[in-house]
Length: 233
Image (cartoon, rainbow, N blue to C red; front, side, top):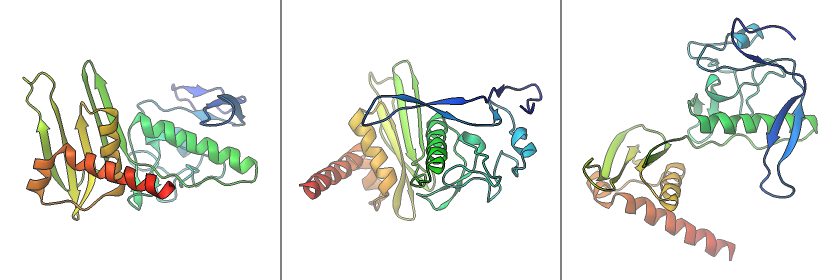
């Protein structure tokens, strides 16, 4: 194995084992992916990829041809996942680099699916990611979906003296809701803001949106839920 470490960690690539979780059929199983080198990057530049011939920019792999929707780089058989890779974000039709563990996990899953499909002579759907960020600390927990671009509309109770503050924000761009943040949301409420961020409905008057607050997302989510149920029936 070529030593590409420069004092950093390089995983022993012999029969790299990737654990995949299935949503149907048999339970979790182990798959093996043959690799000649598996460089890992935790808080430092991806110089190892440059030595493999992949073009790098200031913030990591950012050249236009760096990664595709399957996280294959411009160099055959070299894949890059997580925040080291710029990729085509289908929802916004532009190149993005996302710095969060959710994308790191899902981009790695997409790369593994693409590799295994290629080995079997098959294809997989392109990566269709909704940017998602979250944090949990003690009794506080927030989630954010979409894009924080355009005008921000704050709603809810953000008084730090409140017993259980619940507040959030929408981001409005080109007349549409493109992003949503919510502190202390329930599972259904978090699903509602995710739905808003992905489907990007037209935004009402900003003052009206502020007054409606979370109910705007909840009503939109429930209408879509009923619509989908009626279509299935």
